[in-house]
Length: 208
Image 1 (cartoon, rainbow, N blue to C red):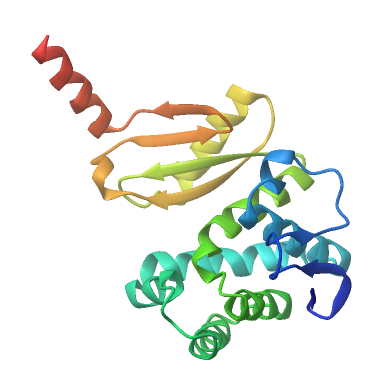
Image 2 (image 1 turned 60 degrees about the vertical axis):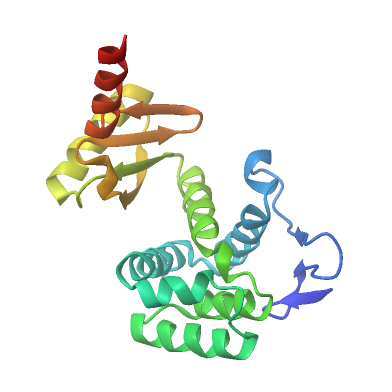
């Protein structure tokens, strides 16, 4: 068992059941049940202790944007064929280019060394959920056919806050296959107003 970032209290077991041990005991069992969730929990514990939750969250948002905007970077992260050394060099270069904070930079190095970069998107999503929970917010995963403007995001947050009765942090992604509209997931609830779903429903109705 090797220490994560040299901190013995939080460690990664790569020889047994891929467990990440963490001191945090007040997080949802749903997040901790998955491997990406356990990595995210370990990172969150470190960020909370270092008082850098906002910095790490901002850095992870930049990484998410890089994954969405760079097919080459996304392929490198997803590929199981890239060597540890090449993956470490790539994430170090990306961290420098994006000016990531030191904690996130070291964490990406750990993922590269443990060959867990393919889990990066899920880890980022889990960390955002943990950070939102820490702030007393609910997290909504929002997919749109086109990028949303700031005014649209603000209006969406206000609508969701009215619906769930608390502030909502939104995790935005773009899915051109939706054609238009939105798909919003809050926990087990899903609100699907996409044109794709409407067309599919119309097609089914016409068959009947």
